[in-house]
Length: 319
Image 1 (cartoon, rainbow, N blue to C red):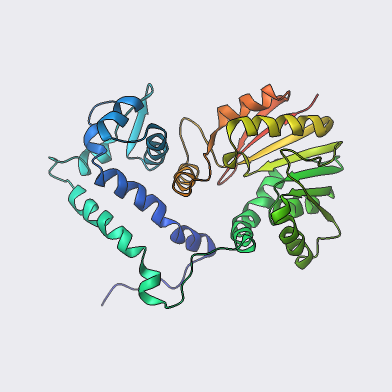
Image 2 (tube, one colour; image 1 turned 90 degrees about the horizontal axis):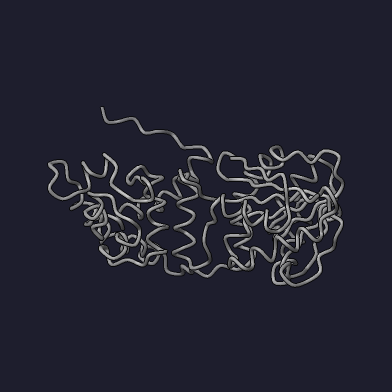
């Protein structure tokens, strides 16, 4: 009898399946460009970039993902193959798999053309509403966990900067009875309002159309949420935003910075999101230590760090 097929899968498995190409492409790219051949001995980032003919900053992002995948190790600031990579991905090993991986990488671009091979009217164009709806799929999954993680009992108001679909605003408003204001860019605010109306929250979550780096978005808030924002901004913009948040919070107000962040032992989802930001040209995943430092420089105290199931949180208090 043939192998029995698994019947269907759950939502988490389906989402992981849909994103499996990210990890695969990281491994294929590293192998196809002989990166593991250069890591048979510990190398600094600068040395490795020169040997591999790679862009330093981009290579660092790729290495974070390879560390999270267990194929590269970082020791005293230098990179070297893990035992797995040394066994399977270095030419000369009796267990070498690199030839097949290089072949698979050549076929990767062809697989990316599958839509056009099958469908006559495929389009890659994505409207702003479609983009928000896509982000909302993940936001709704993470919002309840974040709201439970950060205790806002006894507080009355919160501002959610760049709140997108309003998923996080709804979660905090529902759990703590907060008056929540979502600040969204003028190009997006109308879509945010429409989504909130469809979910029955438009009268309980206010939407302000503003550029949070330049425009007035109110003051006296008891809490401010900065979720999945800093990786889109330049470093000087991150500092400007956090200083503006500090100015607009009430005394004792708390800032909540949430999203994918990296540390010395990067988690796979955060590291792969960093590669996603690299290939889309939209920004860079921040390090936890970097965000902590920015909050301190913006005037916050009682800096705390927490890990959620898929993301990271850094909090601070305005004294």
